[in-house]
Length: 270
Image (tube, rainbow, N blue to C red; front, side, top):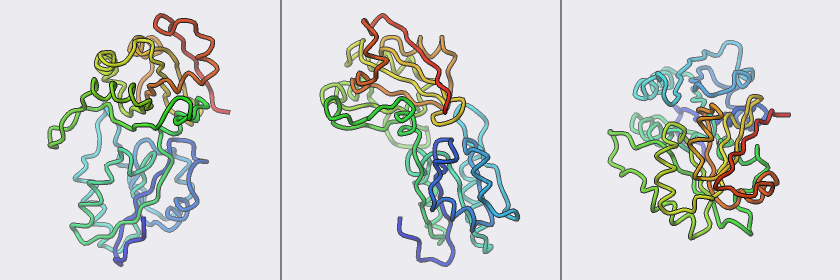
């Protein structure tokens, strides 16, 4: 995004999915110049090594299913510090523009006369594919990928809930890979809805803590999604991948009957 013309601005920075080495050079520069940094819970602590020693670090944790800092408080704090002359960085896990609530923050900052700069980061959906050695858009299996949230919409928004049956039908018919964020707590509901329009042996993968040293992944079929997650004891943060493109993985080729097999694997980062 083109730097904001205003003298007063806030920079929204994507810290990537967890591995601090995936931080961009532009993100490092923004951190080095910041005097106040508002940090999300999922940001790897080593990322903050790039900040000035005198920079003020404010933890504003936001993690699904846990107590979180109110969004309104974060937005007001960004404006307050920027108008006080501070160089403010809002440091988010992944990419701020992909399920990072950047839209609300951009709108609020601009409404208060504060400009916005954006530094992209590697989103966890892409890191999950990398963990598996998977091309989300392999030309023989997939025409594209759909990034979608597994969360139900907030009561504070007017957006309608996702029609998972319709989405599954579209993905299956159009050869699209589903990349589902924040879907662990609703895995059973997602499985039930997708099975109404997708074959039970549709390949799935779940990747927890993508790119981190404690990353874990499992492979299986759509009909076993919830069972796989439960038996493996996996939780958030995690990405669920759904689609035939997963058949390109060597581990899937060794499975004879995906609708009945349960296969899981744990993989430590090198």
